[in-house]
Length: 320
Ligand code: 5AD
Image 1 (cartoon, rainbow, N blue to C red):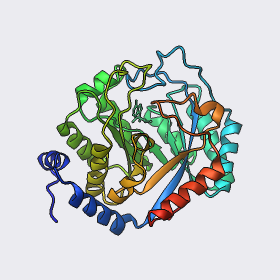
Image 2 (tube, helix red, strand yellow):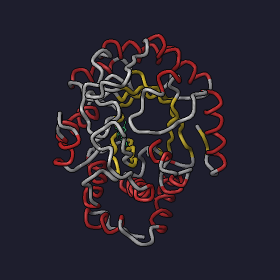
Image 3 (cartoon, protein in one colour):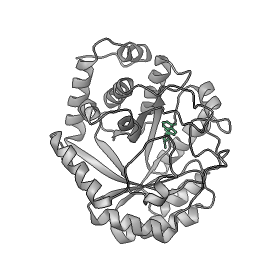
Image 4 (cartoon, protein in one colour):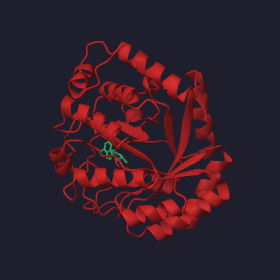
């Protein structure tokens, strides 16, 4: 099957009545390029302090009512060791943009985790100057996640009154040049977004090009300016993941937590996805890291790892 993956072609595909042939093709492209493995990543949320104003995010700086926390560096390393013990091979350290976790502190944590566990370390700690990304690479960080969120520059500006799309994409290009595996991604169903925007989102992933892309539905958070918005559609999100697989055959494409919150219980894995992340954040902090309302269960690192492995096997895939 020959598909038209230009901007116009993508818009047409996204709006199709019957998308099942595209899902089947995405599944085949996934199998041929990245195989049947589903990678399970540990996700640790190390700080909910954030200096940014993103209008969709529950951690935004103007939320003065939210209790803020920072994990101790020793606590971070200990949690990583626990994850390694039950089989995780990658840990993602995520935080708000928290200047307390400067690159020297982050670098020490990364080096310690690598020395003690040998795990791949992914960071998702926001925008810092190029020399800081370079420092983190030298400290041993392997990957960096920084989603472009939306490819529409005006919408980007409305959602992020304190930054620009150009700056964001600049970070991705810098990271790529420094030798990081880079992860971008975007939200589906943002107020003001159209199918044309989603086509641009998909093409932007391909133009960097990204090694990973997290695509999730927008979920309105009651304590943000976008509280009255409508949640993004799970089916449209899955269509975007499938098209991302066609545009980036070898990329790592996670089933995002936000998509699970919108009711996906594994369908996305038969339409291109090959990665899943599980939060290992200690419960006392987990409740304070609600970028969107999620109602997640308490953390149990070994039990939840095992549960995921079984779910993946039941889909006929191979957990790693
Ligand atoms: N709904 C859905 N996704 C969100 N994110 C942040 N806030 C929301 C929200 N309200 C996503 C962004 C960010 C990632 C960590 O979570 O894409 O990059």
